Length: 213
Image (cartoon, rainbow, N blue to C red):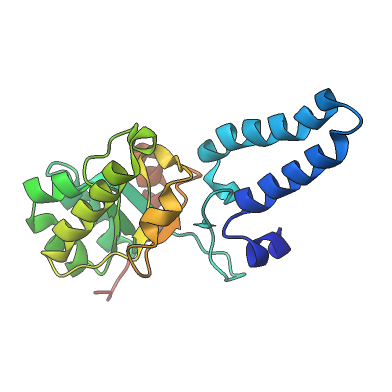
């Protein structure tokens, strides 16, 4: 797969070309056999958006380069007035930093949230403007507009996100072209996912930090 990444814009391009080559080789003997690699490619293209770690259509970041036993804590779908302040207090008490993937229209409704998150030393990512669960089924123009609107809303607060996480973690073939319009914006996978109650329980098991900002 490393060779494919060098030669083609995405793994989908390389796999598709390989499927066409196999079909061309099989066609003189049997059209039925030639249809098999093409059908497999179509099937893979349908399934791949639900498995972003495959990086089939777009390269996806799902782990860091370190070999140390570290975990990157990320929190999606906010900000919400009823949960953000106590969550920030909990993270501060245990000296834990997180990345908050924020929804643009929710930031517009709760603008002071950005300053609160940054004051705690946390990072902020783009989680789309509307958090439309069917966003990846929309047109490229709609997808671009949703990502752009969230970037613009966060820019009003002095933040330029370098990471984007799509709603419900689904990708599509149109996403790479959209992300290229925002220099430095990378796609981040959202799995594995834990319920907030699980995260709170795990944080509560940590010793309370002392002498930390």
